[in-house]
Length: 264
Ligand SMILES: [Zn+2]
Image (cartoon, rainbow, N blue to C red; front, side, top):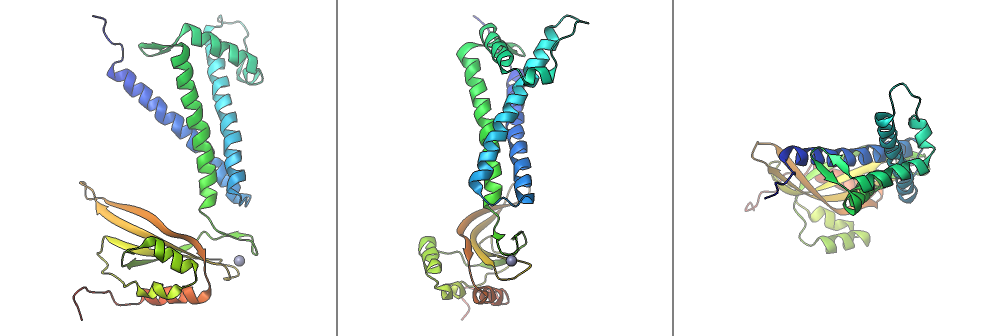
C-alpha cells in the first residue's frame, strides 16, 4: 500500500504558512488604516479600495520575491543573474516561472503539489491576502466617527455600564431612532458583578464638544477554564448622533444605585 506523504510536520508547515499569509494581509491592511487615519481619510470605500490595490501589489511583490529566490537558487554560482528589482519589473518572467513550477510541481517539504491544485492554493492565498488587507483597511475607518468641523477623529470614548439587558433590541433601536430617548432611563443599573448587561459608549469631539455619538452594546462576560475573562459584544445601536441632553441623561444614569431584583 502506498504510504501517504502528508505527515504531521507537513501539516504544521502548511498551517504556519497559512497563518503567515493571513498575517501578511492583515499587516498591509493595518498599515493602510494607519495612513488613512493620519491622512484623515473618512471614506470606507476609498480605504477599502486602497486595501485592494496595495494588497494586490503586496501579493505581486511576494511573487516577485519568490521568483527572484528561485532564480538565484538555480543560477550558477558566480554568474550574474536577475535580482529582486529586475524580477519586480518583469511580470512576464514571474508568470513563466509560475507556469513552469505549476507543471513541474511545487515541493512543500515531502509533499509535491502541482497543476490545478497548486493554482488553487495560490488563488486562495491571493484571496486571503487581498481580502484581509481590504477588509482591515476599510473596517478600521468605519468604526471611527469624525468631526468635520474640527477635522478630528472622535477617538476617546467613555463607557457607562452595567445596565439591564435589552429584551427587544429592534424595538429599542427603533425608539431611539425616533428620538424617544426616555426609554434609556428605563434601563436599570445592575450590580457591578453582573455578567450580562447593556453598556453605553459615549464619544464627543474634544475640540468643539458639539458632535456627540452614542453607541449601545449588549455585553456578555464569561470566564474560561484558565480563569481568564472573555468579553463578547454585540452592537445594538452603532454611533447614533445625539444631543447634549441625551449625554447628560446617560451620565445621570451612571450615578444611579444598582438595581436589586426583589427589593421593593
Ligand atoms: Zn468638533
